[in-house]
Image (cartoon, rainbow, N blue to C red; front, side, top):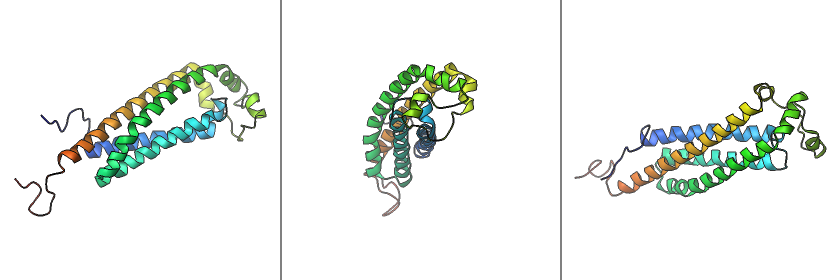
Amino acid sequence: MWCDNCLLLLPLRGGAMAWAFIIFAYSLAGGIFLLHWGQFIYFTYPEWQIYGSIGMGIALSAMINILALSNRSYIWTRVCKFLWPFILVISGIRAVVMIVELQRGKDNIAWECDNGGQLWPASVTSGYDNGTSFPGAFCTSGFTSVYTAFIISLLADIGFQIYMLFLNWRFSKRLEHYNNMKGPFYGGYYNA
């Protein structure tokens, strides 16, 4: 029995493209945030750059997946089918390390908030200052709210990536399943 619509929330190709765009958008925004303000949250160089770069890599993979789905490309769908498991493992490791390091730096973050969004003095002496100040919204909401939001967003990211892996696998299987059927040329879509 072949199930073409099992576990699909949206139509397969269009829904997978929309899902990949959502992953692309929030991964790009998160990567930019970490590359620009990461030194206020993570205090070991180049920790925030690694996390931001991984986010940018996820965004790039999602964009490649969007292009593969839009062109119905079997080769690029297989490339994405190969990439997503590795990205998922790297994202899982990154999520655990980010949560642990955020918890370790909570006193430093509290000091930054108490001092008007200034960068932690040890980070300034190490040369991590890029001339920006800590966004005030993080200080007004409190560390526990920010910590909880980070945990929820990282877990949601893993869930979104798992579903994207499934959608990409499902589209790849559809391409393999219908490979032997004729297309719109030479007598119609499905010569019986």
